[in-house]
Structures are given as structure tokens and as C-alpha cells.
Length: 281
Image (tube, rainbow, N blue to C red; front, side, top):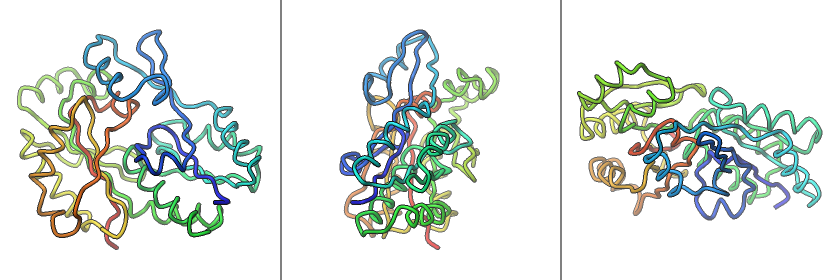
């Protein structure tokens, strides 16, 4: 390919896509301990630390220099680059990518996915499809800006504890939510996190997830679909797949699933389940 696709480590890439992309990692901090996402700490290690540690981890964006190194490698190989980042409203990663791109005019094109995690991942897959078809870098970037408007992410958070730890909700709200087994169902609109609804218990939460997918207009199964989970195992995700079987059983033979990155897991906590898809037009 004459186009290199570059993304950041919040995109939960499947193995085939990971082999074809360059990934610029974010950093995770547990107090004074620093880990490079996906390089010096993997998903298993991260979630073990998250559950066992009393320290709330924090995350930091890649530097412009980290992106510049990836751009330089592509350009020296005779390629132009398309860069797909986590939503600019959730992280400064997009800004770092743009700052670095200023030194590569006409060679690097940066796209804000306006999304995160498995949703960014399937947008990357669409970019790879077009690159393999021979589409030029600037055309791919324009295509992605249009395609991201059809991109949907719907997720259910299992516990409010980590939102509380991160200061996103009050201790009182978190305590009441835990007593009532509240499961918030969330999504992104124009790059910002929104709560679509709150359910009592995982079954009601799964039903709410199904409803919100239907409200989005249904799934375009001609494009990538990906499910994700946070934590040490996918038990809750498998339960969701069973509860939502009617959405998928006549359209796909198997549903692809992956663990969600440590950066997103920092804020969602273990036990979250998510679905990323392109809606029907």
C-alpha cells in the first residue's frame, strides 16, 4: 500500500488490522509507576492492577514527537499517512497528532474519529479497506470524515465506582447507584460522552442496549461490527450476546469480540460491555 494507516492505542484493533497499522501508544500511570499502553502493560496486567490497587490510574496522551516518529517512518518508506485518533473531546491525542503533522505538509492527514475504543477500531478497518483498494491518502481522509457520521458506539457500564473515583460522579450518586444496581448505558454524540439511560440490573441493561441499537436505525452488516468488554473475562459480554441474539443471528455467523484498552478501562472500570457498528442509512 502507498498509504500508511496510523492510530493511537485507544483503538482496540483486531489482529489483522494491528499488523497493517502503526499504533502510537498513550501512557497509563498508577501513582508514580508509568506504563506504555499495550507495550509495557497488557490488558490482563492492567485490569489486575485496576482491581487490586487503591490508586486510581490516570492516562496521558502521546507527545507530538511520538507521532512525528511514526510519520517520518512512513514518509521515508515512500508512503503518505492517514492518522485516526480518539475523539478530540475526550483526549488531547488529536491535538498532538495535528501538531506533528505540521512538519509534513501534504503527506499526513489527521482525522478525528469523534469516537473511541472499538468504534475507532472499525473506522480504522474502513480506512484499511480503502487503502488496499488503492485510494489515495487525502481521499481516504475525506471518506472517513463522512463515514464517522454513521459510526455508533453503545456501551453499558457495570459499576459506577470508577466513574466516582475519576470524579465524574459524586460519591452519593455512586452509592445510590450501587444499592439499586444501576447500569448506565452510554454512547458518543459529536465526540462527547452521553448517558442514554439507566437500567436496574444487567438484563434490563442489555435490553436497553438492544433498544438503543434499534433506535440508531439498525446495524449495517456490510461493514465491520465489533463487540468489546473491560475486565479479566468476557462473562458479561457473553450474557449480552445471548440476550441480544435476535439482533445478529440472521445476519452474521459469528460476532467478533475483543478486550477494551487500559486507557478506556481506566474510566469505565471492569465489567463494561460495548457494541460498535455502522448504522444503516
